Length: 241
Image: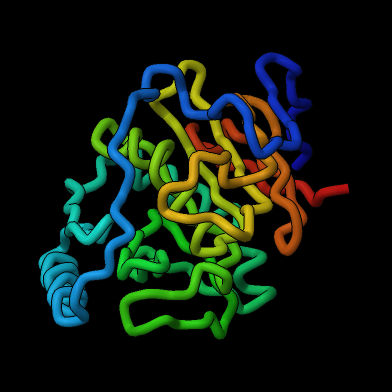
């Protein structure tokens, strides 16, 4: 099925210089304390991971950020529907390439023992594991976060740097709280980022508003109609030219 032609309204597709205005929505911009780079005893790292595991086994989403366990509330209906619709769009590629979809396996964020848990993580059949709970970010194909009222600030302000530091090549932010609703793809992470880095961590940022078409580069090589992520009817993906 052919996709609708994207409009030009609000579309932003640009190469990001190392110093630039942040892509974070204006209502989320605020001064935040920088994470500590201090290393703590290995025993504490093990305790944090065990605590995360206990939360996850109790059906909570638990991450580690700056040596602290952060527990997120359960996702709402809109949130899980968006992930389900995106999964449907990507499923033919998953089958053809023997990829894996994960929602409970995390990403290791060096140099701390930090763990981020994407709403959807797409990995090759043999992803490179850091340990039983975390994958090396460089082995991911795509990390996806869907913004909610409780996670939107983290998804926009903290996770781009964390995922880029980990080497995640593609980071997709679906923001149903924006007006109009948006889908943003970040790619080309800087290779030398630190926990205190103020540079834009991804060198390329493309934002499409609902109703526009967003292209996922290789290894996906496909275009998605963004309205398909928010509507009940999912259109099939269109191959990239």
